[in-house]
Length: 265
Image (cartoon, rainbow, N blue to C red; front, side, top):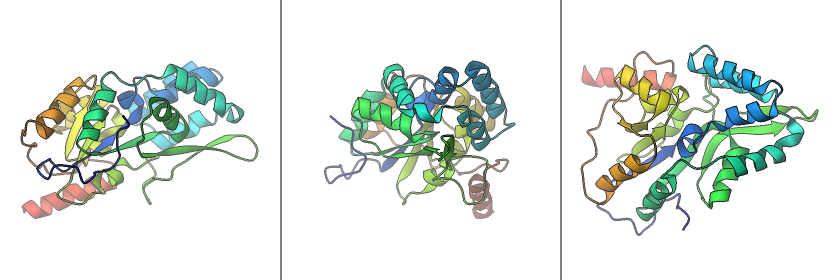
């Protein structure tokens, strides 16, 4: 069965109105695919991937700059080979299919939102038979054969992130609530602006440090169990929380935090 990406008439009117924003690298799939590709296909790739990853997660460079450095090293004439490599080497995270099946059964909208690249995300989803919408950066090849990362979902003024996850997260119609499922420090702005957060790895550390309420997970089993409690057993959703962070580097998060402060005054 193919998980649906839209709510249908068969949804129970008593079901919570949830939409899921799902990260890809390190979340839906086990590895960080960008690092895998740079390590495998770029000259001195292991060292470059490690250096860029450390700078990125230390906050010394943004995701756009990270991709600029890495994509410049990828061979533009080997994209089909890279796609085949991803198809053969990148597994779904354990329990992901069961989670997506539960979401399909309850007609929840699930969108893959990633700072990764469309060609390798699509390769994995097609292999798994998953018909899910994708919001991600895109790899294009210039006339001279060099690859270039394009950012179709960027913020109009902020140039830190390649894709503005915060903007995608808040693009909903109340009373729908957004559930954000992710793993990395680059996901922090999505977590700051989401109604409900499931976090692992660096994102979990960030949420705990900044006091952002979240559910911890490693594989998808606890995610599926919690959704089942909401969707099947009728457990109430967590209380609505103020969105945004007053110390954030994200303009959307800052704006939400400021609005929350005004409304509480």
